[in-house]
Image (tube, rainbow, N blue to C red; front, top):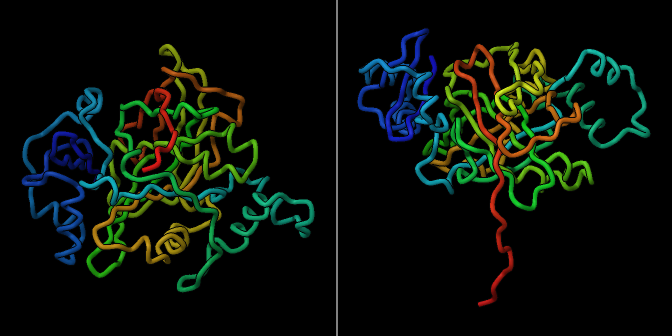
Length: 323
C-alpha cells in the first residue's frame, strides 16, 4: 500500500495500479493519529474509511499537486534528521574494514564506519553502536515533490543525496509510531563539509524533499534505485544507489533506537522524518549542480520518482538587531 498527500487536502491510496482517494481523509497525519488512538494498523484504518474517486497519480505529480507524504499542520512540530556512514558502499570497503586491525591513522569517519560494521546490527533485544547523527531543520524546509530545492545564498555547493526516510508520529503516551517510508533527497553542501568535518552541521542545514509516495509496511531488505541529474532536459549523470538492511551496516531498528532514546524526540503529536543515509552522490564523481538542474530519485518499491529542480535563495540580511 502506498499513500500520497494532496496539497489541497486529501489522501490518495494506491494498491497496485489502482489509485483512489481515501474517503473522509484530509491528511496522512490525521489518518496516522486515528490509527494510534484506535490501537490499529494504518492499513486497517484506511480500509475502514473506504475508497472513493479514482485518480491519475502520475498526472497529479506532473501538475505539482502532491505534497510531502506526511506533513505536520504546524511546521515547528515536524523534525528532519538523519544518520550518516550507515551504508556499506561496496563489498571491498566492507572487507577492508574487517581486515584492518589497527585504527591508527584512520579518520574519525572511517572509525565510525568500522564501528557500524562491527556493531550496527545487534541481536534482537540488544543495543548496537550509535551512528553519526545530524539535524536538518523543521517542517519549514520539507520540500514537496516537484518544488524547487533551494540553496541558501551562503552555500558553497548544493548536491543531492538519494536516501530512504522513515516517518514517525509520537503518540499521547510518548511512544514513537512508524507511519511508513519514502524516497528522500537529503540535500547537502558537500564543499562546506569538505573544508572541515566539523562543518558537517552547517552543511546539513538545507532543505530536503520526500515522496511522492509513502510505503506503508516493512522496508524491503534490498532496495535498488537510480539517482539522475538532468540539465537542459538531458541526463548528465546517473548512478544506481542501494539501500535496505542488506546494503547497510546498521539495522533500521538500531537507527530508530538511537534517535528516539532521547525524550526530546518523544513529545506527543510531533512528527519526525528520519533519513537513513546513502553511499551514492554525484559530488563524489566531480559533478557540480547549478540552478535549473533537476534531480530524479527513483526505486521500484516506492512508486513514482522524486523530482526537484535546483534553485538558490535570495541574499538574506543576517544581521541581528538589539532590542
